[in-house]
Amino acid sequence: DESEQVQTMLSDLESNVIAAVLLVMSVIVWALGLRSSILVGLAIPGAFLAGVSALYFMGLTMNIVVLFSLILVVGMLVDGAIVTVELADRLLHEGLSPKAAYARAAKRMSWPIIASTATTLSVFFPLLFWSGTVGEFMKFLPITVILTLSASLFMALVFIPVVGGVIGRRQPQSARQKRQITAAETG
Image (cartoon, rainbow, N blue to C red; front, side):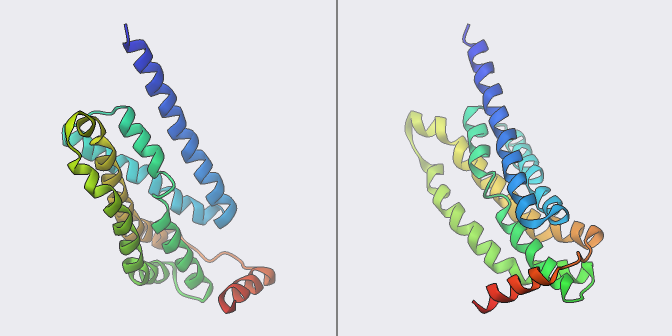
């Protein structure tokens, strides 16, 4: 009975997805702080939920390749959200209201985020046309990556700015942080 082996492999892969999400969130909390990381962290489950829901509605099943694809994209899902949240955080420090800061950040960074996502998607798009038995088995990889990265684009440019506009607020900035930002920008 191979169902027990498949169940064990799926369980292990699911554990790896959870571990990957926790590691990514740890890095984000360390780099951005708690409030910003909460906003960025919403991109991961949101994109996963949208991607898996789209797979379900397309009649595709959850399998090893789908779970591996989710592990593959977990780090990529947060890129756009990080860029949006970071610019909004800077605009908040310049005195804008949360709603205005997140709206301006999403508008300003929309084309760079779209271009970045499109370049990543362009790598996986040709895999949709993989023929033969291997193509039938591996079709789940590009489909899952394309769906979840597209969902992360929506999360970065629509969902995160809306939520950030509601819960965002200016964090106190130390003189050291100001010097670091100035040094980084003047290079």
